[in-house]
Amino acid sequence: MKYIEPHAHMVSRTTADYEAMALAGCQVISEPAFWAGYDRSSEQGFHDYFSLLTGFEPQRAAKFGIKHFTWMCINPKESEDVGLANAVIDLIPEFLKCDNVLGIGEIGLNKNSRNELGVLERHIAVADEHDQLILVHTPHLEDKLKGTKLIIDALKNFPNIKPERVIIDHVEEHTVAPVKDAGFWAGMTLYPESKLTSRRAIDILEKFGTDKIWMNCACDWGVSEPLATPKAARMMAQRGHSEKMIEKVFFDNPRDFMAQSPKFEI
Amino acid sequence: MENDSPSAVNLVDLDFMDARARLLDVASFLDRVERAGQMDDYRVDALLKAIPLLQNAGPDRAAEILLSLSDPSDEPIPEAHTKGAAGAFSGNS
Ligand SMILES: [Zn+2]
Image 1 (tube, rainbow over the protein chains, first blue to last red):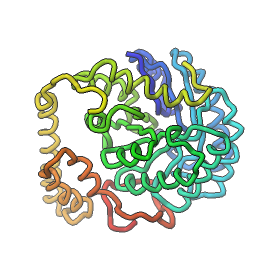
Image 2: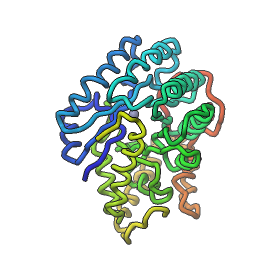
Image 3: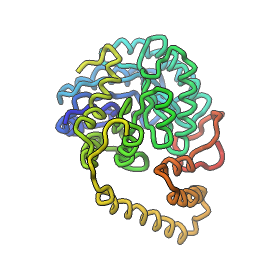
Image 4: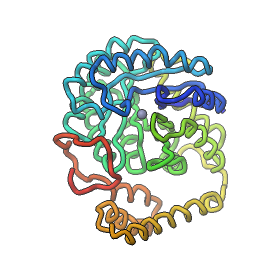
C-alpha cells in the first residue's frame, strides 16, 4: 500500500525506521518542527535545527526513496521565554524560501498559557503575511479541550487565514467536532501508549466521515511507533473498509491538504 | 456514515478480548492503589467518576469520559510552570 506519513519527527529516528517505512509503502514524510526534549539555549540552536530539517533530513529520506517536507516554528513548549521565541520567529521567513518547507508548524498550545497564546498569534501572523499553510499541535490530555477552543478562536481572529489551509492535529473524540465544524482539517495522531489508539481513530472516521482528516504517527524521541499509520490502515481493512476509502485517508487526503502549497509534489 | 459503509464484520469477535483485558487492568489498578492506601489522589477520583459513564446510552461514551477528565475553564493561565499533563483535571487551571 502506498501512503503518506504527514507528521513524523525523523531527526529523532534511525535509518532502520526510514527503511521500515519505505518497505511499508511510505512515499512522503512531512516533518513539523518541534520540541527537542530539552529547551534550546539560543536562537542559533533553532537556526541549526531548521538547517537540518531543510538540508540534511531530505537527503536522508531520499536514500530510501521518500520525499521529505517540513514546517517551521518554535514549539509552544518553548514559549515562556518570549524573547527567545520572538528571535526564533524572526528566523522563519528566511527558511520559508527552502524547497521542502510547506508552512508554519507545529504551532499551538501546550499548557494554555498567555505567553503560549501570544507566540501562537505571532506565528499565525507570519503565516498570514507569507501565505503559508499551518499545522497546529493541540495540547494533550486534560488540557486538550480548552486548548483546542483557544486555538480555534485565535485562528478565527485572522480573517485572511482560510480554515481549509489549516490542519489541527492530535484531535480526539471530544475535539474533532469543533475542529471540523469550523472548516479546519483534522489530524489524528496514533500513540502506542496513553493517548489515541488506532481503534479509536477508526471509530472517529466512522462517526465523522473521511473528509478533511488524516492519521499520523508523530514518532519522535519518545516511545512511539513509526509504522503506526500503515498499521492503522491494515486495521481499517480488518474492520471491513474498502481499499478506496483507505487510500483516501492515508494517501489522497494528506496529498490534497499539502498540495495547497505549490512546493508539494510527489 | 457519509462516505461508505464498512462491509459487515463482527466487531465483538474482533475486539472483545482486548476490551475485557483493559477492563481487568482498570479493576486491578484500583485494587493495587487501594492496597497501597493511595485512593485519595485526585486522578483516582477522576477515574472513579468517569467509570459510571460507561453505562451511558448512546455511542458517545469515549467523548463523555474525555470531557469528564478535561479542564473545563476558558481563560489562558498566567504562566506555564510545567510542560507535562497529568491526564485528569486537578481543579486548578
Ligand atoms: Zn509532533
